[in-house]
Length: 284
Image 1 (tube, helix red, strand yellow):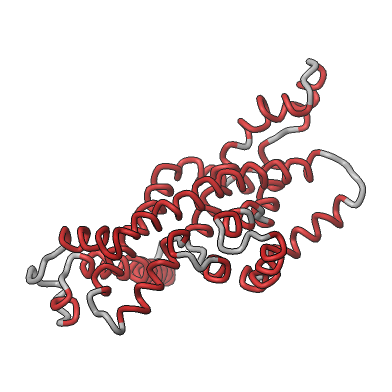
Image 2 (cartoon, helix red, strand yellow; image 1 turned 180 degrees about the vertical axis):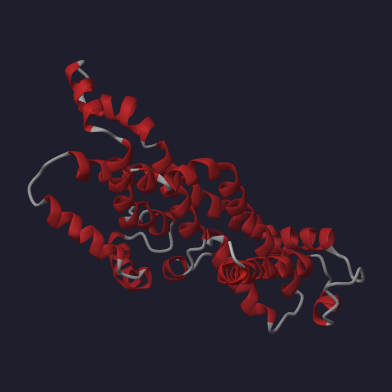
């Protein structure tokens, strides 16, 4: 191939590499800053000595984090794990089951109901906070665990993904063969369909886990008892106090670093299922 013909291809490849490099830096640099800042004491943090060995206080900051305000951070962390892990697990199972029903069964007003699901996907969660608060108030659930836990169990986007995965992973012939063998609908779903939809369940689980773990506005509206706070709301309250009490700054940064760990672990451990789930539509 001639040099003039190679030049546009090389320029295009270089442009792509530049864009990818900028994207990587944009993603990695905040995390790098968080790791470095979490390892510094308060004086080094305000003195902008992040890249020096001076003021190393990583383990001290960890100890201060779990002793601050009688160790309430550990309670916040446990709350977030409870909200996010159990909520995401139930939500993913419910969403995939609903998506499977929309795909494989025929019932009255099926497409209209699915249109409502798609419309719900487009509604920002902050818009729903006030109606949810009023409903929880009528039910007497405000400032309880259930006021935050119940709303996260229903995920319209997960239902949409569940239908897409059902279309890509569950052939109708398999269902007919199971019915001919005498399997009931629930037995067939539990023993046959759910195994086929495992990548979809994991994918919806990861999306919902991230959304619940980072959920902030709904707990802020629903909760006033600090013992029920998730990590996001607890760190926000500490950060608000840091302007008056600077000793909160190091523990807020360390708490933010530890708050990222469960999400990183979840994506690292489940990425095999997540990748196969994301390519389902392409394979189809």
